[in-house]
Length: 192
Image: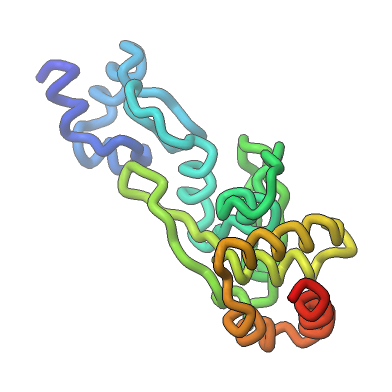
């Protein structure tokens, strides 16, 4: 089988074990040597012509519960102007965090509220990663404003309101985070 036929058997990104089952170890090593397959991380590969977000693919492959949060989520929802230099990733409290190549700032969120406002986005190659909704991201910005800065939280809230965000939706979700509710309500009263 030629290299193109072997590549057609593989998904855009894949694990070593997937490749071995599909084309065999010898063929995989030949594709790597020919530059047709590129290593993303230990045991994780991609086809040479795939051009998706390698960092998110690596994170999603190594941590199933990984969820884009805080500054990174706010930027994805276009609620702040920042282009984060690290990826903010939330995982449930007491969960192991792997050592990965991308620049990541890990956040351990309470397991009881971890899934609130959590969606999933397609990152290509048949893979997905968690992403907190705009509302949850704003709540987290207020909840962690002592570390992240109150300006970021206020800017995100203002933009969200201007884009048609409904305060009742935000308050309803914020009720699961009682220590944040007062600050959020006070800011909403000022802005509205």
